[in-house]
Length: 174
Image 1 (cartoon, rainbow, N blue to C red):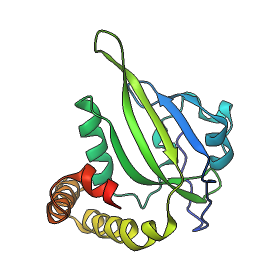
Image 2: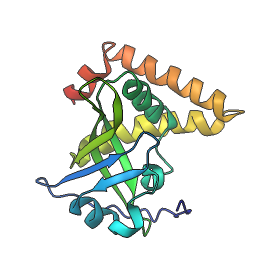
Image 3: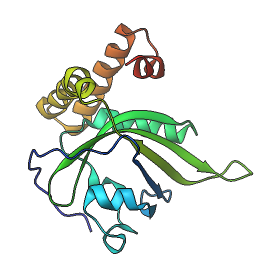
Image 4: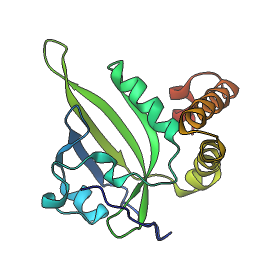
């Protein structure tokens, strides 16, 4: 179902009380999404169930952020991250995503669960967007996607080191 959606530059906003919920299988295919997900994204249940979650990935999101996310998830750890998502009609919305593995009683990862909340737009404008723009520029200026991701990850790690060396502590200090 992956189609190319051109971003319009128009931002949509969640209400402070809104929580977006989605679940995926191990391959990233959406198995559940709540009404808030449908309302903000413009997709319907028929459009989205069975589709890859990266369907809503905004092209300006740095790959390094998703590399960090998948590294943590594969280690059976949760992660919080600021993410720009893309709506069906090209608008975008920013969220603070909390993503965690769904684990069986015997410790087997069954899939992934994400809750996303509204954000402070000033924090996004002043801190997150400049950081993500730097990472994305590193990625797009590279001679190969692999080199871009590796260099961007190094830049992200260096940024976190400069903020005290702990990603979670930095993120929650914002």
